[in-house]
Image (cartoon, rainbow, N blue to C red; front, side):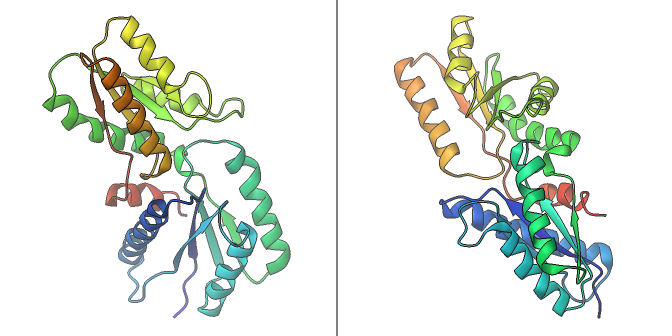
Length: 249
């Protein structure tokens, strides 16, 4: 039986094992949805790869997976960047790695770079709204939410975060650039807010989300009158798998 496509989910990579475990779970959810959509008796090929912090460079991971896909009859590999921002990784690094893989593979299989996950603004907004809705309902007070993204120095890349924050009636902050989380929290506190919410615009728990929690705890210890609610990152869910499915052609 021939599969027209195989699928490779590409993440940034982490030394923390939790994101990779989450990626494997997400690949399984996507595999099940693809099988249901395509009506195949065999499961489609869905793999994971990392742009950084992997023993092999991304182009070699792509080449290895593409070779396995060819062996089971796939003639196309859809590469799905699970990145939330249109930064340097999405616009430059991943295309460069795919170009190297293409030089190695030649015409044995078509390499198809799909849009990055962050292009699904409406669907992601819905996921974030669903995450904070029960927290809004269970806590009293006029809570001001902060949407916290990693941030990108590439011009225009953070516009989607600002749009996301506007949709959620929140304000944006960034982990790696200004305005950062602590700056935003201090601004809100100085403006008289005592009920704050932090919504990490990250896919999975990891080192950064741990550090965000530590910042929130330290702020609460310094100012016990504050009520700070920390939401979970997006996580491995069927809803996220549906958004990824929509990126496939």
